[in-house]
Image 1 (cartoon, rainbow, N blue to C red):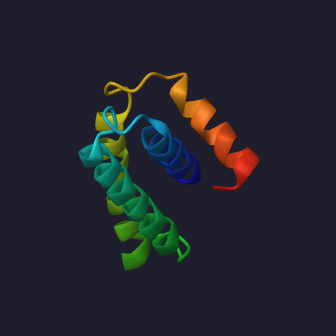
Image 2 (tube, rainbow, N blue to C red; image 1 turned 135 degrees about the vertical axis):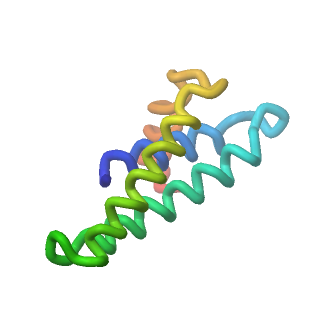
Length: 93
């Protein structure tokens, strides 16, 4: 799940780095929601296996993974993704 969260964050940063006229606010909002779902899944997954929280974590993770799969590659040049993440690492923003 941490890897999926990292991918969602990279896509979010890449979308933010686009020119204002090319930025898609709906995609930003969807990526933000996916990130929240993945963070919730991570929090819930810390419990014991086969508990209510652990089962809920799987549900949130599956929902977020499906949504992320729908967002990936949708009109975002792949080169923009690592470029935006590298800029975040250099600047801290």
